[in-house]
Image (cartoon, rainbow, N blue to C red):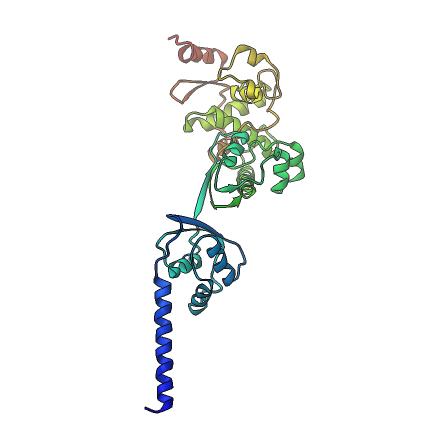
Length: 336
């Protein structure tokens, strides 16, 4: 065999050996220090930086091997930032494919209709998957931080301004990102609803409609009653009657509320006492969902001015005080 042929054979053997070694390395299961690890890949990271972030995060992967494999497979420009979960036994090849697909490890934050903003903040503060940048901020500071208009910041209250929904996010996301998303979603839903509002509503601004929606959210135990409840409050506003809604009174009592609404509570004046004051309270009293928002914007066509809960979640609606008192006797006082 000529020297040239021998060299070629050695080269082919070397390439084959390298390929076999590379294949073995790429498909060999990795033993992690735990059953699973979470590693966050930062945005705009180079391939080598991704490899180092994996290694420093506890994934025992050779950076030079990861870089070579990524380039060989043409995936250098497809690596995606985010939080990833890796389980022990995963191979370097599967690690690369996971990051190239953007198969991020998503966490969840759920905001429920009818929560107060205080409750929302407490729940997000307790979410272990968020970075709590808002800790210690006042409501006004938080609104400023998420880019709310100066008028809202000056108002100082975040009540009602955030849309109740389930928010998915990468672990390690700053909590202000969730607030920003929820705020923008509420503004979008509110603007859409206000643009298509029914004519002749007794409230002049989207914010007033939001306040009514929050009251409807707290007053309604049966979905089919929402538009009727909204109509009662709209009719009372038109007639110049006090709204006399207990949830607003309770909101105004704050920590003084002991779980029961007493007669003296209804007589104690606060900005939210709709028995002692006419018109709407100064802010919403909860985070309304889209159904309550739509009810406030499109109340039912009725002249009802009163309603009383039946005890099963639904309500009885009355046009006259006499009929209302009869309903109270039947469903509240137990008189037939």
